[in-house]
Length: 112
Length: 118
Image (cartoon, rainbow over all chains, first blue to last red):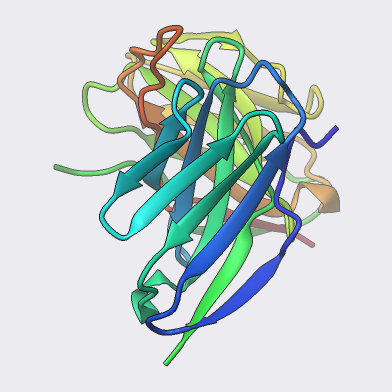
Protein backbone atom coordinates (compact mmCIF):
# COMPACT_ATOMS: atom_id res chain seq x y z
CA UNK A 1 0.00 0.00 0.00
CA UNK A 2 1.69 3.15 -1.24
CA UNK A 3 0.63 5.78 1.29
CA UNK A 4 2.68 8.55 -0.31
CA UNK A 5 2.69 8.80 -4.08
CA UNK A 6 4.65 10.83 -6.55
CA UNK A 7 3.07 10.04 -9.88
CA UNK A 8 5.58 11.88 -12.05
CA UNK A 9 8.88 10.00 -12.24
CA UNK A 10 10.54 12.88 -14.05
CA UNK A 11 10.15 16.57 -14.81
CA UNK A 12 12.13 18.84 -17.10
CA UNK A 13 12.05 22.62 -16.62
CA UNK A 14 13.89 25.48 -18.23
CA UNK A 15 16.26 27.47 -16.06
CA UNK A 16 14.57 30.51 -14.54
CA UNK A 17 11.06 29.05 -14.78
CA UNK A 18 8.97 27.55 -11.99
CA UNK A 19 9.29 23.86 -11.09
CA UNK A 20 6.25 22.24 -9.50
CA UNK A 21 6.61 18.81 -7.95
CA UNK A 22 3.50 17.02 -6.77
CA UNK A 23 2.78 14.49 -4.07
CA UNK A 24 -0.43 12.75 -3.00
CA UNK A 25 -1.11 10.79 0.16
CA UNK A 26 -3.80 8.42 1.30
CA UNK A 27 -3.34 8.34 5.08
CA UNK A 28 -5.48 11.07 6.65
CA UNK A 29 -3.53 10.64 9.92
CA UNK A 30 -0.43 12.21 8.41
CA UNK A 31 0.05 15.63 10.01
CA UNK A 32 3.56 16.57 8.94
CA UNK A 33 5.24 16.43 5.55
CA UNK A 34 8.81 16.81 4.40
CA UNK A 35 10.62 17.21 1.11
CA UNK A 36 14.07 15.75 0.61
CA UNK A 37 16.46 16.34 -2.26
CA UNK A 38 18.90 13.70 -3.45
CA UNK A 39 21.92 14.03 -5.69
CA UNK A 40 23.49 10.91 -7.26
CA UNK A 41 25.73 8.94 -4.88
CA UNK A 42 24.65 11.07 -1.94
CA UNK A 43 22.07 10.59 0.77
CA UNK A 44 18.84 12.60 0.75
CA UNK A 45 19.07 16.03 2.35
CA UNK A 46 16.20 17.76 4.08
CA UNK A 47 14.77 20.65 2.09
CA UNK A 48 11.56 21.97 3.60
CA UNK A 49 8.64 20.77 5.71
CA UNK A 50 5.07 21.70 6.50
CA UNK A 51 2.73 20.97 9.37
CA UNK A 52 -0.90 20.15 8.68
CA UNK A 53 -1.96 23.23 10.64
CA UNK A 54 -0.57 25.32 7.79
CA UNK A 55 -1.33 25.37 4.09
CA UNK A 56 1.88 27.04 2.97
CA UNK A 57 5.50 27.22 4.06
CA UNK A 58 8.13 29.26 2.28
CA UNK A 59 11.91 29.20 2.47
CA UNK A 60 13.71 31.29 -0.11
CA UNK A 61 13.06 29.89 -3.56
CA UNK A 62 11.18 26.92 -2.15
CA UNK A 63 7.52 26.90 -1.17
CA UNK A 64 5.45 23.92 -0.13
CA UNK A 65 1.67 24.00 -0.39
CA UNK A 66 -0.64 21.60 1.42
CA UNK A 67 -4.25 20.89 0.43
CA UNK A 68 -5.59 18.64 3.17
CA UNK A 69 -9.01 18.14 1.63
CA UNK A 70 -7.39 16.84 -1.55
CA UNK A 71 -4.61 15.02 0.35
CA UNK A 72 -2.13 16.73 -1.94
CA UNK A 73 1.02 18.72 -1.48
CA UNK A 74 3.31 20.41 -3.94
CA UNK A 75 6.78 21.87 -3.92
CA UNK A 76 7.37 25.02 -5.95
CA UNK A 77 10.86 26.12 -6.89
CA UNK A 78 11.18 29.56 -8.40
CA UNK A 79 13.30 30.52 -10.17
CA UNK A 80 14.70 27.09 -11.03
CA UNK A 81 18.48 26.81 -11.20
CA UNK A 82 20.75 24.13 -12.71
CA UNK A 83 21.84 23.09 -9.22
CA UNK A 84 18.24 22.13 -8.47
CA UNK A 85 18.58 19.13 -10.79
CA UNK A 86 18.14 16.18 -8.45
CA UNK A 87 15.60 13.60 -7.31
CA UNK A 88 12.99 15.01 -4.94
CA UNK A 89 11.16 12.85 -2.42
CA UNK A 90 8.16 13.78 -0.36
CA UNK A 91 7.77 11.99 2.95
CA UNK A 92 5.54 11.83 5.99
CA UNK A 93 6.21 10.47 9.49
CA UNK A 94 4.21 7.51 10.71
CA UNK A 95 3.52 6.25 14.20
CA UNK A 96 4.64 9.11 16.38
CA UNK A 97 7.12 10.62 13.93
CA UNK A 98 9.85 8.00 14.06
CA UNK A 99 9.32 6.27 10.72
CA UNK A 100 9.23 8.22 7.48
CA UNK A 101 7.10 6.99 4.58
CA UNK A 102 8.54 8.15 1.26
CA UNK A 103 7.15 8.64 -2.19
CA UNK A 104 8.90 7.11 -5.18
CA UNK A 105 10.67 10.34 -6.06
CA UNK A 106 10.61 12.72 -9.02
CA UNK A 107 13.75 13.38 -11.03
CA UNK A 108 13.93 17.10 -11.79
CA UNK A 109 16.14 18.28 -14.63
CA UNK A 110 16.75 21.99 -15.09
CA UNK A 111 17.77 22.84 -18.64
CA UNK A 112 19.94 25.87 -19.35
CA UNK B 1 30.95 18.62 12.12
CA UNK B 2 30.95 15.20 10.49
CA UNK B 3 27.77 13.93 8.98
CA UNK B 4 26.45 10.38 8.88
CA UNK B 5 28.98 8.03 7.37
CA UNK B 6 28.44 4.56 5.96
CA UNK B 7 30.78 1.83 4.87
CA UNK B 8 31.43 0.30 2.49
CA UNK B 9 30.15 2.63 -0.19
CA UNK B 10 29.78 -0.29 -2.58
CA UNK B 11 29.51 -4.00 -1.94
CA UNK B 12 29.30 -6.75 -4.52
CA UNK B 13 28.63 -10.21 -3.17
CA UNK B 14 27.57 -13.60 -4.37
CA UNK B 15 24.16 -15.02 -3.68
CA UNK B 16 24.13 -16.91 -0.39
CA UNK B 17 26.92 -14.93 1.27
CA UNK B 18 26.46 -12.81 4.41
CA UNK B 19 27.14 -9.06 4.37
CA UNK B 20 27.56 -6.43 7.05
CA UNK B 21 26.85 -2.76 6.46
CA UNK B 22 28.04 -0.13 8.90
CA UNK B 23 26.64 3.23 9.91
CA UNK B 24 28.28 5.94 12.01
CA UNK B 25 25.64 8.49 13.03
CA UNK B 26 26.16 12.14 13.83
CA UNK B 27 27.69 12.47 17.28
CA UNK B 28 25.03 12.98 19.93
CA UNK B 29 22.14 11.72 17.82
CA UNK B 30 20.20 9.17 19.83
CA UNK B 31 17.91 7.99 17.03
CA UNK B 32 19.17 5.93 14.10
CA UNK B 33 17.25 4.60 11.14
CA UNK B 34 17.91 2.18 8.31
CA UNK B 35 16.14 2.49 4.96
CA UNK B 36 16.70 0.91 1.60
CA UNK B 37 16.02 2.11 -1.91
CA UNK B 38 15.51 -0.48 -4.59
CA UNK B 39 15.79 0.49 -8.24
CA UNK B 40 12.99 2.86 -9.23
CA UNK B 41 11.45 2.81 -5.77
CA UNK B 42 11.21 5.25 -2.91
CA UNK B 43 12.97 4.79 0.37
CA UNK B 44 11.63 1.86 2.38
CA UNK B 45 11.90 1.92 6.17
CA UNK B 46 13.69 -1.05 7.72
CA UNK B 47 14.38 -0.42 11.41
CA UNK B 48 14.60 2.36 14.00
CA UNK B 49 16.87 2.57 17.04
CA UNK B 50 16.46 4.80 20.05
CA UNK B 51 19.75 4.43 21.87
CA UNK B 52 20.67 0.77 21.66
CA UNK B 53 17.07 -0.44 21.57
CA UNK B 54 15.05 -1.08 18.44
CA UNK B 55 11.41 -0.28 19.23
CA UNK B 56 10.43 -0.64 15.59
CA UNK B 57 11.76 -3.46 13.44
CA UNK B 58 8.62 -3.68 11.35
CA UNK B 59 10.35 -2.93 8.05
CA UNK B 60 12.87 -5.77 8.11
CA UNK B 61 11.89 -7.91 5.07
CA UNK B 62 12.75 -11.30 6.54
CA UNK B 63 14.59 -13.04 9.34
CA UNK B 64 17.72 -12.93 7.18
CA UNK B 65 17.95 -9.26 8.11
CA UNK B 66 19.14 -8.11 11.52
CA UNK B 67 20.64 -4.97 12.98
CA UNK B 68 22.31 -3.92 16.16
CA UNK B 69 23.56 -0.74 17.70
CA UNK B 70 26.24 -0.53 20.34
CA UNK B 71 27.20 2.29 22.70
CA UNK B 72 24.34 4.36 21.36
CA UNK B 73 26.45 5.06 18.32
CA UNK B 74 27.60 2.73 15.53
CA UNK B 75 25.03 0.43 13.94
CA UNK B 76 25.51 -2.66 11.82
CA UNK B 77 22.93 -4.08 9.43
CA UNK B 78 23.55 -7.74 8.64
CA UNK B 79 22.00 -9.63 5.77
CA UNK B 80 22.47 -13.39 5.88
CA UNK B 81 22.31 -15.68 2.85
CA UNK B 82 21.90 -12.76 0.48
CA UNK B 83 19.46 -13.01 -2.41
CA UNK B 84 19.37 -11.05 -5.65
CA UNK B 85 16.29 -9.16 -4.50
CA UNK B 86 18.40 -7.74 -1.65
CA UNK B 87 20.26 -5.62 -4.19
CA UNK B 88 19.55 -2.00 -3.30
CA UNK B 89 21.05 1.12 -1.80
CA UNK B 90 20.97 0.86 1.99
CA UNK B 91 20.69 4.24 3.67
CA UNK B 92 21.26 5.11 7.28
CA UNK B 93 19.94 8.25 8.95
CA UNK B 94 20.22 9.73 12.41
CA UNK B 95 18.40 12.41 14.37
CA UNK B 96 18.35 13.95 17.84
CA UNK B 97 15.45 11.68 18.74
CA UNK B 98 13.31 14.49 20.10
CA UNK B 99 10.22 13.79 18.01
CA UNK B 100 6.97 14.63 19.74
CA UNK B 101 3.37 14.72 18.62
CA UNK B 102 3.76 18.02 16.80
CA UNK B 103 7.41 18.03 15.92
CA UNK B 104 9.48 15.79 13.77
CA UNK B 105 13.21 16.15 14.23
CA UNK B 106 15.02 16.10 10.95
CA UNK B 107 16.61 12.87 9.85
CA UNK B 108 20.09 13.32 8.37
CA UNK B 109 21.09 10.70 5.85
CA UNK B 110 24.41 9.11 5.01
CA UNK B 111 25.54 8.51 1.42
CA UNK B 112 24.37 4.91 1.45
CA UNK B 113 25.87 1.53 0.65
CA UNK B 114 25.10 0.15 -2.78
CA UNK B 115 24.71 -3.61 -2.45
CA UNK B 116 24.77 -5.80 -5.51
CA UNK B 117 24.04 -9.49 -5.14
CA UNK B 118 25.15 -11.53 -8.13
